[in-house]
Length: 221
Image (tube, rainbow, N blue to C red):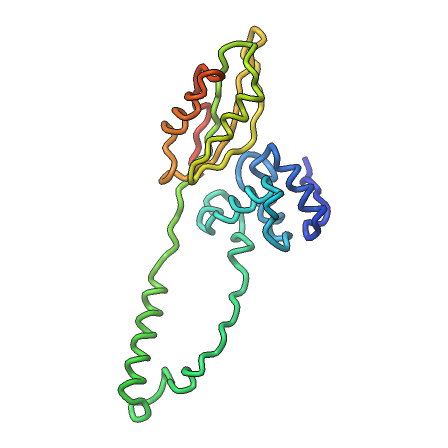
């Protein structure tokens, strides 16, 4: 299957088409981040507007992946927004007065102090490594009471659950027999922020719709 075509993502029309495509999906292709997501992200000129919530959700989610996470998923390269060339800071006039490589005869006590402080700050910054954020991809089976349960309202209720580190993804109805369907819905969670047990309990609180919740799939990403 070829990659979806959204037209020119540098135009408002292309971003609107992307938003419509992501209404029921978390990724451009499949159930996890891929090169197609990075390619699409690299074509965007700016952050999607607030009135394009699906594209904005996807944008923030893909942007959160570190180079190490992408490599572990088999995706080549880093997030385009994290590899842009840094802007050149305005030159500090005070730098003209301090030569970090000046000889002992040329630097006075103040210049030496400034040099040591800057070298120390540089060493500390270089020693810090980016924190690897552990995430999991989960597929939940949400079962209704009977065939009279409004499945659309059930899904809307489930998606009202908002937790820091939780991103809802694609969903579908799966027949279980006797005219009854279950809601199968995907989400991605940050392990350190979201308790899967707590998430399941929150879904089960919608007692008018939900009979039970099972974990159909659980994968570390």
